[in-house]
Length: 165
Image 1 (cartoon, rainbow, N blue to C red):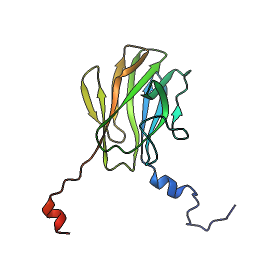
Image 2: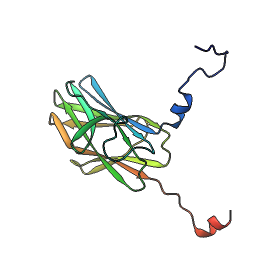
Image 3: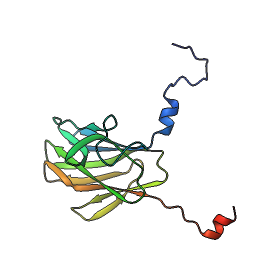
Image 4: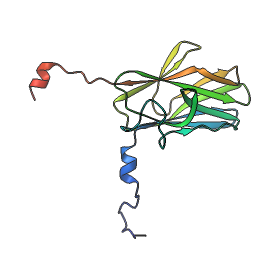
């Protein structure tokens, strides 16, 4: 182990952490919570990525996950989309009742916008860090109610402004 001087960066993952691009969502309900992490990487695909994705294990009082090809994920890596992409979100709970979906973190994703689409109410919610969206669950499991809508933000330019540089 290498000793560090006072004020020096002793975090060996500093550069790796600085490059992370991710959104962390949390589902809370009945005193329980479940996290979902969506990371954006150049080497990820819109399919199953061994070594990047983590399957969600069942068995807790509250479970929140993304769904792709009928597989539930606790951690899912995706490429940065070049057009709108909709990712299915699912949940299961041991009891029905009041829940909240919270955006816990948005890290290094300035060129992406996120919305939560509630297919039951046909409502869109613009997502930003620490937003809390309450909802009532009348079912113990739902894999079709929510979609995470990921949209790349377009940089608006005109040809004349490009030529000026």
